[in-house]
Length: 76
Image 1 (tube, rainbow, N blue to C red):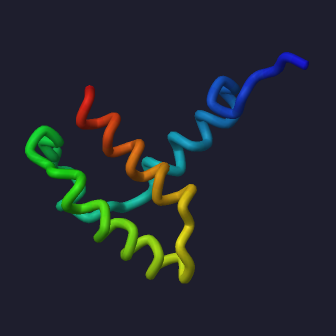
Image 2 (cartoon, rainbow, N blue to C red; image 1 turned 60 degrees about the vertical axis):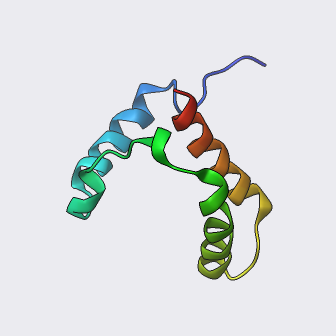
Image 3 (cartoon, rainbow, N blue to C red; image 1 turned 180 degrees about the vertical axis):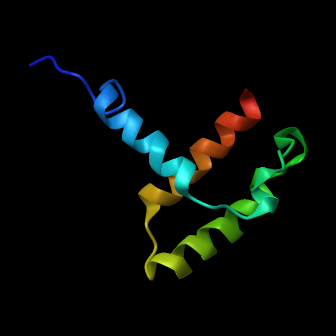
């Protein structure tokens, strides 16, 4: 069965954009980070610990997703 994902369906993307515009983020999140200067191997244990604290259990899928997102930023 072929179909469209939520990302491809305009009905959902418009709602997401509207919600994002309504959210308030801390000003420190406006600053870009030069990922070429970040040593991911140093911060990975902290990320693992912090995610585990927030979730209340260690979730390898979430942790690996975060690592992959950060590694993509380094490569791009």
